[in-house]
Image (cartoon, rainbow, N blue to C red; front, side, top):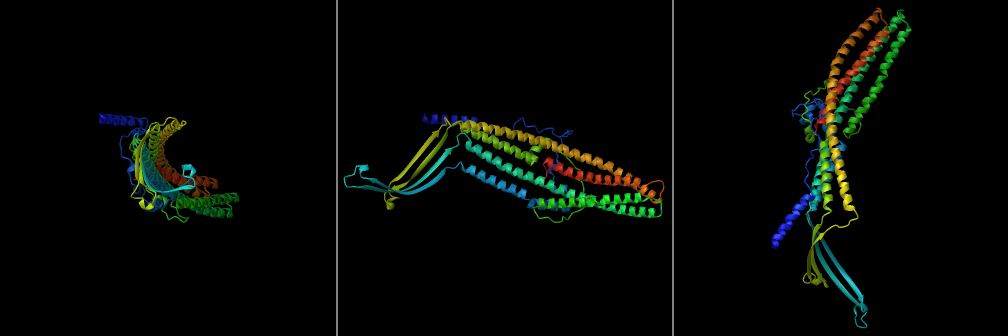
Length: 464
């Protein structure tokens, strides 16, 4: 009969405990479908699965990224955070084991004779006790508090790992974009220097025409000012190159030095831009994963907060040796006791309720953050893809513009040399339009390269 009662009681405890703490399931409210604007493809092939080395054709850039992944200090900090979370996880696992304490003490007690009704003349009574005691305590995880704490710690560790991978993907983007910026500045400097040489020759041509009386000094001065306008761009571009090199060195966690590099024209743009479906962001994007793990940790913390409203079952035991003489310690006075107790919270100054309200609020905040990161991810994919398409179209049109302006500059320069019905203002206008188009053409190529990298990261590439 007693065994039947015990079985029923144990089953009842299991049922109640399952109602106290619950297992995590991703909420149905999470929106992850159809987040890519104007994209209804159901093809699940995604460039996020591409190894990052296959995205970049430049071996110099590949080498810089390798060094960054090995040396970047932010990435090293992320690794240490993983180590810290792993240590905390081990700590939560140890909570399932009983505690064990060893206590060794020796005491002297002195009392007056009057205190113990000793005979007259007996002034003091002295006792000496030696004691060795081993004690243990274990809390039964009836309501799932320890299990929830363990699952929360696992989520915290996985969050740290996902955050590290997010830092890695962002580092790849930062290094490649900084490298492409550097190549763009190089090409802008080259075009500027070529323009300066052209304008120097123009000054010489116009000076000769002035000396022969064919033009006025105003046109010569105008050509000189035009030359200086090009020359003043050189220090500005050199400063941008200097800063771009320093940024790359910083990302590689090393002191400033000159960066060995290729050219912008050598860069091959990756064009197989497959998006997959937006629900894949949940498993591909490390920051989305980190946000969900943060939500899971908050969910488990709410589970833990619920268990404080229920009684805790603690078993304690201790035993050892006690003796008035040290030589008799292990042969006399062996003692032990085992105690089991239930502690039911009745009044805790509102701490349990406050703890639960706080945990629920934190859980809701974590859920909103999870959804926010997913929505932002979809936006970033849409923006990066459109930026690439837009830059590609601009480059197509810009090439035709540059071809037309190049011919126009050649014609006006020939006309000014022959003084055939034109003036230097026409030459200046056509040249300024050409150099502006050439500079914008560099930006078109740069935008294409960087938007592909940004799309790769937005889809969750770079860590596999």
